[in-house]
Length: 133
Image 1 (tube, rainbow, N blue to C red):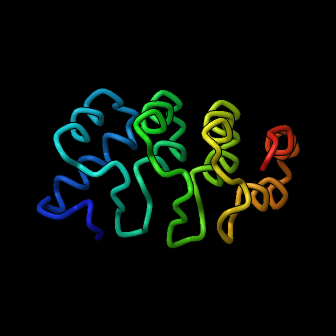
Image 2 (cartoon, rainbow, N blue to C red):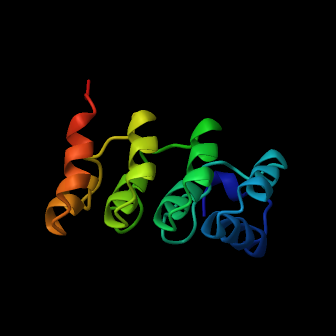
């Protein structure tokens, strides 16, 4: 998968992604503390942050960001954690990501493109309310 998975079995990696998918923030943190890479990728190119954002777990997203998760990863589908937050209409997660300087224009299915494509004016409004350098 990537350098963050060296020495880890596919079952362990899948288990870690299950923790992110289920919003199990504390056990996920323990696995990261034990050596699982913070930005580990699954076969789709998703990170733990992308999965937690898609599954709408703001506490898990906040903890991953606090630990330094890379919010700029674009998966094999051209999506980012912001894309997932916008698609799921999760204002809380979108704000967390924007506050962490995530770029809403990254990816072929960027957060901006998703907001426009699916008619989500509130999500677009939130994106535009954050100043970009």
